[in-house]
Image 1 (cartoon, helix red, strand yellow):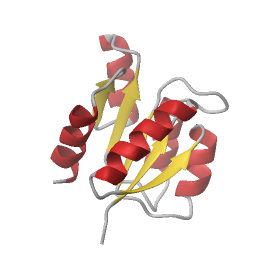
Image 2 (image 1 turned 120 degrees about the vertical axis):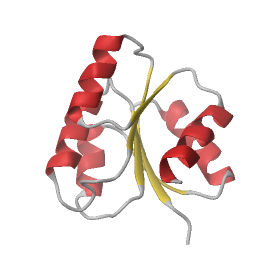
Image 3 (image 1 turned 90 degrees about the vertical axis):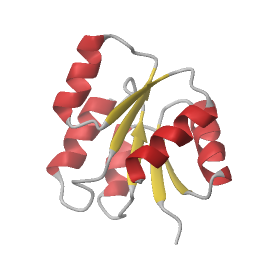
Image 4 (image 1 turned 30 degrees about the vertical axis):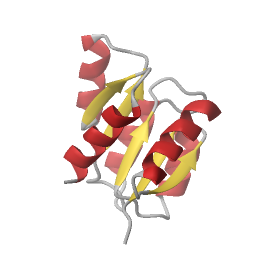
Length: 121
């Protein structure tokens, strides 16, 4: 059975690229338009991994990570931040919230897949 990965990003083009890249490599994908949408979907659906943007309306990536880590269903899944932010302070905030890894945009599809494979094993 294919692993299910959720991607949360307010940019439709980024969601499309992430989804396309993951599906090409045999993963199933659930899309969310922001942190709030992602958290709602994650409350009733088990996924194997979450890839989220940092800067989103309604609820940002850090709020989403905290929400996932505070929940029960997906509490221990790996979470990768996919964002234009590359400052160490932001990475520290992400790690403190519970992020597993960090990919800076723009990203190469093979870079994304390498991280996913490394994290999911």
